[in-house]
Image 1 (cartoon, one colour):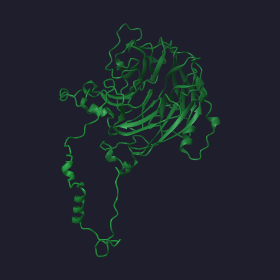
Image 2 (image 1 turned 120 degrees about the vertical axis):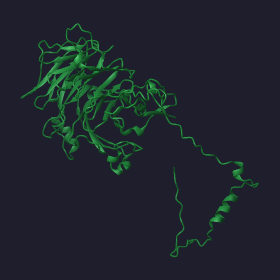
Image 3 (image 1 turned 135 degrees about the horizontal axis):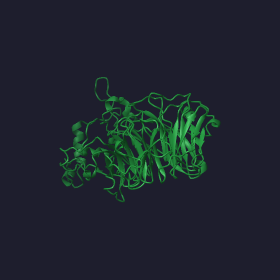
Image 4 (image 1 turned 180 degrees about the vertical axis):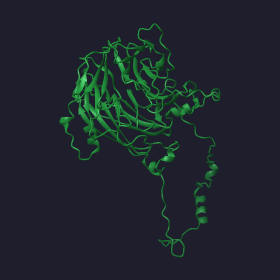
Amino acid sequence: MSKRSATEAQDGQPYQKTSASGSRRDMPAVDEMGEFEDAWEDEIESDQEVADANEEEEKDEDGMDVDEFLPAIEESDEPPQAPQVFIPGTHVLGNDEVLEADDSVYIMRHSMNVNWPCLSFDILRDNLGDERQRFPTTAYIVAGTQADDATKNEVVVYKMSSLHRTQKDGNDSDSDNEDDDDAEDLDEDAILEYRSISHNGGVNRVRAQPISQNSQPSASQPYHVATWADTGKVHIWDIRPLIESLDSPGYTLDKSKTQAPVFTINSHGRAEGFAMDWAASGPSSLRLLTGDIHSNIYLTTTTPSGFNALSQAFRSHTSSVEDIQWSPSEPTVFASCSADQSIRIWDVRTKGRKSVAGIVSAHDSDVNVISWNRLTSYLLVSGGDEGAIKTWDLRSIKKAGSADMDPAPVALFTWHKAPITSIEWHPTEDSIFAASGADDQVTMWDLAVEQDDDEAGMGETFAGESQVPPQLLFVHQGQKHIKEVHWHPQIPGTVISTASDGFNIFKTISV
C-alpha cells in the first residue's frame, strides 16, 4: 500500500468556509452569390463606419473621451485566493460563515431526507454484482425509525437508485473508466424509494443477516433482520417481500406476511439494549447475540423448527453492554464492550458463561463501539465516550483473572472531540476504517500511512495542517447528530451515514 504524506490531508478536508447569461444576435441572410442581403432594403454600414460611430458615442456632451476620463481597469495577474480549509476543533465559524462542501474531492455525494430520523441502519447485499465501479449505481439499506410517537415507528427498506457521479472537475483516477456522458448526469437527483413494516416502539439498533460474497441473495429465501426495540424486545423480521416489492413492478405486498415479526426474543425482560450482531454463518444456522443495559448478553440460534432463544446469559460486564462483534475467524468467539470501560472476549463453549479474556480499562469512559477486522483477525478497533479511537492487537490481551496489566493500544487517535458513535473496518483494506462522532464528523483513517520525513519540515500547506494526523485520510461533515456509518461491501470506497437529518451516501478520491 502506498504511503500518503501529511500534506495530502488537505484532500481530506472536503468542507471550506465561503462567505452568465449570453445572447445571440440575428445575422443577415446570405444570398446565392455570397453577398449579405439586406432584408429591410437599408444601407449596410461597413466595419469602419461602425467603428467610427462607436468612437463618437464614447464622447460625452463636452467632447471628452470616456477612456481619458475613466482609465481602463488593468487585469490582475495574481490567482484568486483559495478557499480556507476548515479544520474541526481548530477553526470556528463566524456568525456569517457556513460550511460548503468541496465537490472536487468527492466522486459521488448525495443527501437524502426521510420522514423520521433513522439512528440505526444496515446495508443489504444485492444481486447487482460485486466491485461495482460504474455510475449510476443502486444501494439497498434497512433502517429503523425514532418517531415522535411509539405507534408511528417502522422498519424501512430503502432503495437508493440513480446514484450519479457528482464530482465537478473529473480529476479522479477512475475518470478514464467512466462513460463520457457521465458529466450530463451531475445535476440529476438520486431516487429514494421505500417499503415499511410497522414497529412497536423506537428502534435502537437494526442489523441484517450477513450474506457472504459467495452466497448471493435468493428471492426464494428469507432475508432476516433483527431490531432492538426500546420496549426491551428484540424482533426478527423477514424483509424479503419488501425488497421484491421495490424491484418488481406490479408486485402485491401481502401485509399479513410482513406486519408481524418472524420471532421475538423476550430474554431481556423489559431491559432496553443496543448491542447486537449476527454470526457470519449459513442461512440454516443463524446465530444472533444481543446485549442489554443490565450487562446481560443472550444467544439466539436456529433449529429445524425455527429460532430458539437460550435462557442463560453471558455475564462479566458490570454495566451496560454497548456493542458486540462475532470473531471473523473463530465461529464460537465474540467480543463485547461496555460502559464499564472494558472490552471482553468470550467463547460460547465456556461453562459459566464468563469472558475468557479482556482489557479491563480500555478507555477512560464508556466504550461505545467496536469493530473486528475481518481480514487481519487479531486487530480490533474501539471508540469511546471521551472521543478516543484505539486499535488493539488481540494477541497481547490478558486472560480473565490474570494479574497482568492491560496492553497498550497499537494506535491511538484523539481527533474527535465528542463521543464516538460508530466505527467500522473497510471490507477489503485491512488498514482502513471509518468512524463517526457526536461532533458531527465522519472520518476515514489508514493505519498504514506514515509521516513523510522529506516533507515533515517543509511547513504547512494550509493553516492548521500540523495538527492533522497523517493517518487521517478524510473528514466528511454537513450532517447533524451522526449515529452510524457503514462501508458498502459491493461498491468499493462508498460510505453511507445516518443522522437526525437523513442519510448521506458518498465516495471520495481518498479511499
